[in-house]
Image 1 (cartoon, rainbow, N blue to C red):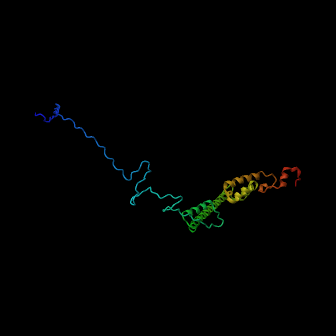
Image 2 (image 1 turned 90 degrees about the horizontal axis):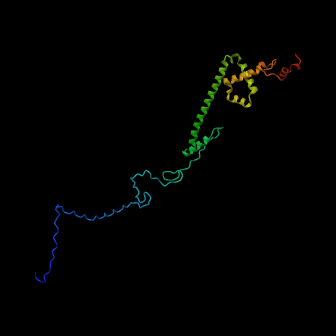
Image 3 (image 1 turned 180 degrees about the vertical axis):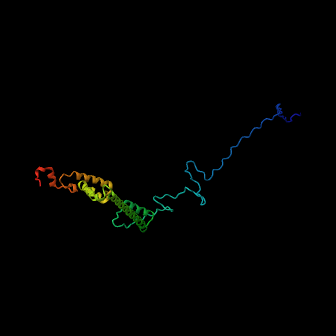
Length: 241
């Protein structure tokens, strides 16, 4: 080698492969984190109320729970207050008194939008039905009274020729013990015609007749006079006829 020539260094040769003949595993490249996806335009920030930022539904979508702005009181379809009921006036029959039920009917009629003329027609039909029902009840009650009296007249012990005399004993018991309230009850309800009541009063009247002081006219169903009672109590004080 000539003097002054550049010296070239030769790198050492690579070591031989292992006896197994396998190549060394390649080193995996460092993974690069994926870029974050852009947030959707309608994403809600943390703490936001549900539905905030969502686009309104189009006309073709149906929201079953959607409601209009609430308005106090009854509202119509447009959110306006419902009309107030119109007072209902009725022409009542003579002697008919307004009851709580009738007042409630008038209120309901106004709430459903009935006018006085329409409500009057309904009331007239109801009133007619009530009157017919009451007349039918009175007719049935009178028919029952007739049956009671006929059964007493046909009774072999109470009726027949002794009917009038037995009724006299019944009246005697009433005159003796009945209070004004009881007399009014007998007169207004005719309950005194019931065979059980008649037989009870007849027994009382018969007892009064049997207990009449001897020598008086009580046996005939006529109450003794005061003089007759005194004669029976103090016979020695009176001269014999």
